[in-house]
Length: 112
Image (cartoon, rainbow, N blue to C red; front, side):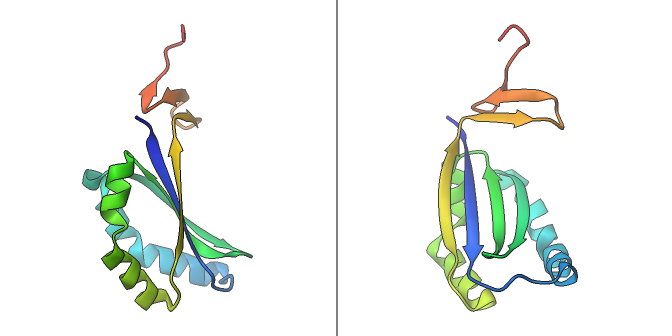
């Protein structure tokens, strides 16, 4: 079973770098606390087509447990627009920080 990536997008104007950093830092502790619930990583997005985040989850089930209808309603209240979610299964990851390629979360050996 592979990891799950969820891309969350809000149809909002691009923020300044200062606004984007301030907003991200204010919520980062919440996401750091989700490791036990299966969140591996979150990247904050700020671009011409909107703002949002890219979430890497251990499993699709852990992502689905986070992105409930209640969570969607909370995000809609906070940002003033309902986010769009795109779901992706990811079976192969190239991780240059760890110097490895993983298949379904397990590192390949040099022998392959």
